[in-house]
Length: 391
Image 1 (tube, rainbow, N blue to C red):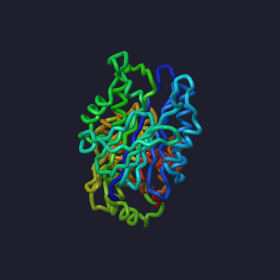
Image 2 (image 1 turned 90 degrees about the vertical axis):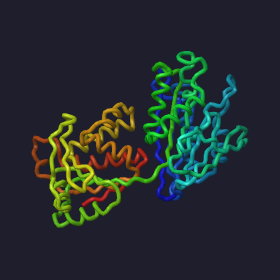
Image 3 (image 1 turned 120 degrees about the vertical axis):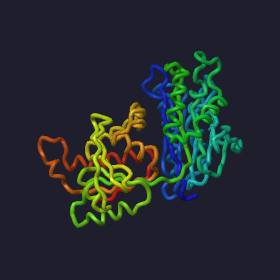
Image 4 (image 1 turned 180 degrees about the horizontal axis):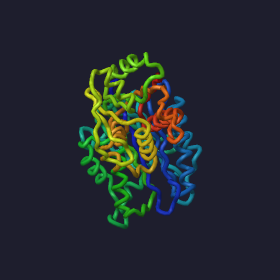
C-alpha cells in the first residue's frame, strides 16, 4: 500500500449576489502521522456571517486534529463553541471530516452535511456508518480500508439542492449525483477534474444563478506517479555529468526545459536535439525532441506560462480547457505536473545564461529562481510531493 497516494481537489460556487462563500474547506497534513485531514464546513445561510462561521469550524477542527486530538474532542469543542440558531433550531455550521491515514485507511465524521459519496470499482459503495451522539449532536463515523481507484466525494447541501425551483422540482437528489459520478469514474479523471465537472453540472442546474453556496471536495486513491523536471545547466561545467546521471537515474518521466539544458541532456544520452517548428500557441516557443526524454521545451518563457496556469488552477480554474487540451510546451508540462504526477523532482541549474544578461530582455537569474520557488509552492498546494535539488 506504500505506493498509493490520495489526490485531492475542491472548488466552490458562491450564492448568487454574494462575494464571499458560506462554505469553507481546510486541508492540512498531520506531521509525523503521514496523514491528511480535510474538513468541509457549511455555515448557516450565506455571505459574510456564514463564511466566518464555516471558516471557524473548519479551522478549529483541522487544527485540533492535526495536533493529535481525537475526532470526538474536536466535535465536542465545536458543539460547545458554536450555538444553535434559536429561530431555525439548527446548528450554525455543519461539517464533514475526512482523515486519510498513511494512505491505507479513511476515517470520516459527518454532521448534518449530505453523506459522503464513495465509488469503488466505478460504482456506488455503501460504506459502514456508526451513529454516535457527541456533545449533544448526532454524527456518523466510518472507517474504511482504502483500495486503488476508490473515490470519495463530499458536498455541501447546495449540491443536493441544485436546480430546485428551476430545472428540477426538488433539487438534484443524492442518487442522481451518484449516477452522474458513476459515468465519470471509469474515465480516470483527477480529483480536481471530478470536482470541477460536478460543480459545473450544479451551476448549470442553477442556471448559473446559485441559490445556495455549493462546494464539492473529491478524493481519489491512486498509485504514485513520479515526475522529473530539469531546468537550467549547473553552475560548474564539471557537474554536468553528475546532474544528468542523477536526473535520468530517477524513476518516472523526464521533462527538460531550456536550450542549453537540452543540449547537455542530449550529449549525455548520445542523442541529437531535433527542434520542431510547430507553434501551437503564439505565446509559447515550440518544443524539441530528444530520444530518451519525454518532453523537451524552451526554458523561462515556457515555465512562466506553466506558473500562470498553476495559479489559475488554484483559483478560478478558467484556463483549464486551454492547457488540458493544448499541445504547446507549457500545456504539456501542465498536463504532466498537474494531472499525472504525484511526486515531482526539480533539478535546477544555477548557471547564469549570458543571453539573459541583455538589459533589453525582461529575464534575469532572480526571475528564474523565483519561477521555481513559486511553481513548487503552487504544486505543493495541489497536494504534490516536491523535492528541489540545485546544482
